[in-house]
Amino acid sequence: MSFWSRQRVLITGHTGFKGAWLSEQLLMKGARVFGAALPPESQDDLFVRLGHQQRVDHHIVDIRDYAALRSRLDAAQPDIILHLAASSLVRRSYREPLETWRTNLLGSVNLLEALREAQANCPVVMVTTDKVYANAETDTPFDESDPLGGNDPYAASKAASELAVHSYRQSYFTETGARLATARAGNVIGGGDFAEDRIVPDLVRALASKQTLNLRNPQSIRPWQHVLDPLAGYLQLGEALAGADTRTFQRALNFGPFKEERRSVADLVQVALKRWPGTTQTDCASSVMPESKTLRLNADLAGDLLGWRPRWDFERAVTETIDWYRQAHEGADPIALTQNQILDHEAQA
Image (cartoon, rainbow, N blue to C red):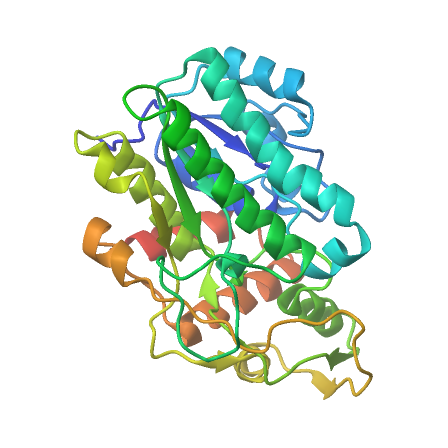
């Protein structure tokens, strides 16, 4: 029997892209999934396409509202919590800095405080991002001992949430209470993401409408990975926190692609267009919102502690992603597409 069978799992941000994939994984493992999140932004969202409003214990909760979040925690009585809720778009964070800080920092603190007040004694995986590191653009993969930083509101607010987790762990949860770990991953791709200002959703929208996509930063390097790879890491980390040697895992861990994979936006587009032909061009207009040119992660520690490793390389990740979108565009059942990819991914374990 799976560890997750019949576990009561609270997911914050279950209506988001990663949250929907995670919910589907847990449903397939027999878990009881409880959600706390804002409503989906559109009917295109994966949460809607997978019918999760009827398939999970779905509740609309704004994590910036402490009373509402505490009430949801009390009602769910979770065995494990996976905190994914966030304002996650870099360019939006420039336009809406206050909301970004309120969601990413104060929303996380609200959850930590609710755990403290409720005297909850459960594993909690707090998902942050690969962008929490002070990035000097050196092309060296970041490991967990590197200093935190962040120039844009999104990155800085996520780095601040890491400090909040450390503070609560050291101040309140040293001997008893919640068992906290942070998971750092980013630049995930996969079917069903329809967010603004992300390369894959922007590309898919252009392909579906037979338009030319303008590429902002084709040479930017990112730690691309299929969404199922870091989610597998989050689940392994949650299970480890529930075990006997919990102190070993109460820390930050990176979940990223193989270190030797150094791939750009242009590389991603090239592989994608092999599966769904279309046209792109470089957008020569300079952006008033600066973005990092190089971002790479060292995930060796997750391998050492958890035995975690990426199961799909760059080419497979992009191929599976574009195939999901193209087949869904052509009328395939999104639930079947998603479940089949989960099964294929788990077969690589």
